Length: 349
Image 1 (cartoon, rainbow, N blue to C red):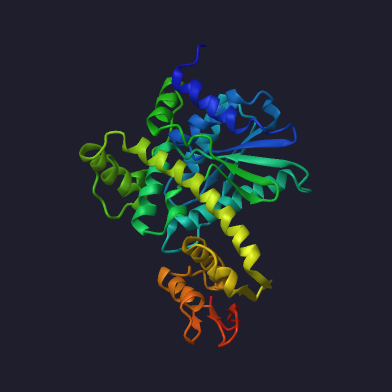
Image 2 (spheres, rainbow, N blue to C red):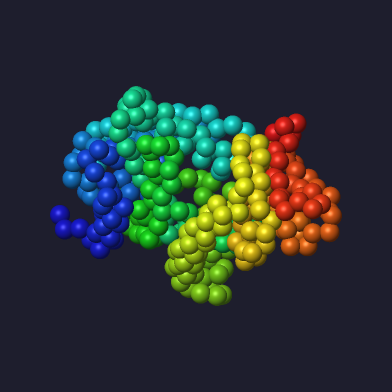
């Protein structure tokens, strides 16, 4: 059967993602049963020549009534596509304020467990393909802008990330739209599940997850009033920001290495003259990274105000008191040309 343009593009994106994968790699598709992940499963099946290295993982978060049936139906669809190795894994998502993050952590834990059960000695490299689309990327950029948390946030969803030493998550569909994934499913008669927490176009419902609210109201409003191609524009912004962020991170890494006097799990000591010689942007990034590191046990990120206060210990020193963070303290002693980031062993998580 002749492949249509959307299918060819999707298959091509998967092949591009996997072009450096050798025969040592096992390829997994994370599949929820939604249009995006089923389109990805279809594309991956047609992109990977050796079907024996291909598998699928369905995570049942058990957060909605009927989730077990959705998982079973998804497994049947995957079998119909041609998948032999399909694993359903149930998880318990802990109660947290940020349900999306809690579900993600549970899902990643499930990925690791499923793969470990099939590769007990960790002898293979594994790639997990997830179906984040261009639309997801655009939503992530808007969320980052709303938080006002800098270049890294508007870099959106990264193309890939290491989950463990032998597991990498890759996202081949960041240049594929949600409309295209639905088209592929309908074209190939793949019956997909519609998550009720996604809501509907134009629905104003504050009970829905924030990402769904952005999808249903903010993006349509921006398309109508600002730019009909806003999804493409935001995705392009993420791509440019990610490239800039990568270059900046490399400069920060070199700057920190040059300024670092010593570092342990509990303490980082940096040279004040070396820090002072750096540009403000690089210096602030180094300060934030060091502060976040010793403050990690509290899971509280260092704020801009705190970073600026720590920066004043370097560039505007006049005998200030130590800067106290939730789980750490940062100080410079009079006459000392070192700034110390010290973890507080009594900090409460």
